[in-house]
Image (cartoon, rainbow, N blue to C red):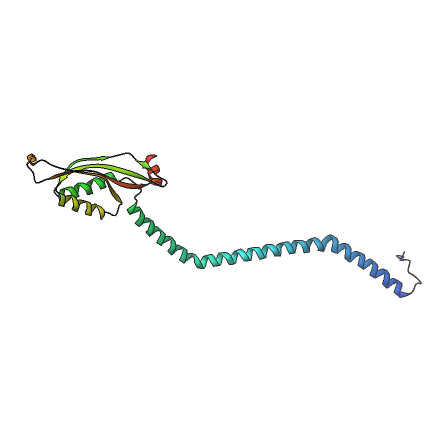
Length: 196
């Protein structure tokens, strides 16, 4: 038994037309069902590849700038270290007391009192007043203030009261000076110290 196409006895171009129609239907059906989704997927993947290549280029550019950024960070850390010496992060009372005691001994003073006060809170720092009372001479007091001015830490001298000592004291000291030495503490680290 032979397969009948229904084209027997017809001219040859009928077979050609029928073959082209069947081939066209198969091509458009395969294109719609198989090729079009694949083309869409390929276009999407190509877009992702382009995006990833752009990110790679950004990463390479950032990698080339990394040494410059590291140098900037190092410079900023050095600047921060310098600023923290001026505006320290902790009270550091023993060190400050030692330095002031050394100054009073070098300046031939009697340090009568050294009383740290409470903090006066500001926006990003705290003021820390220290009440100081000492006895000495005018010249030594001026030298004392000059040496305090050379500290890397900022110290303001406020509320200075100087009075003359009576000659009955039996020493070379001629004046008594009472003042507040106000220093400043960086607030952020203060909170860390307060909460161990």
